Length: 116
Ligand SMILES: [Cu+2]
Image 1 (spheres, rainbow, N blue to C red):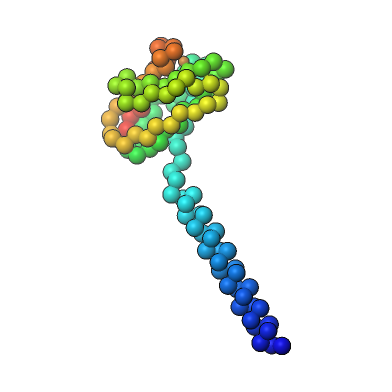
Image 2 (image 1 turned 180 degrees about the vertical axis):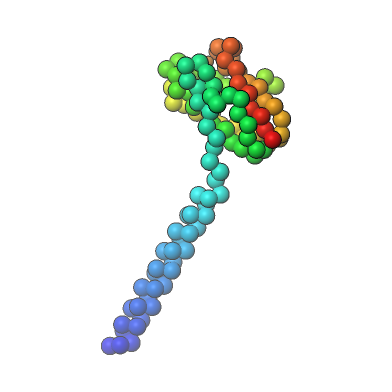
């Protein structure tokens, strides 16, 4: 009787350990992903602008206007498709430098990212 209880207890413990191991693996994967730095496009303006980030940063642009915009770098190192409302474009800046960009649909819309 006592032995059965002990066996059941050990089995429960083993199941708990397996569950916790699974959970910590999932947690680790989440930690590995760096959150993107946000730039919003609202009322024909990129903001924040200019934006300074460390090298390796991923920037996510989100179009909050109800007309399409895109994100095109002056040196053509990145170029999004036209973004409809709430669509996003992400780009990871790996090298330090100053990156100017614009919306090719409305070329007066310009922005700047400084990567340190
Ligand atoms: Cu635009």
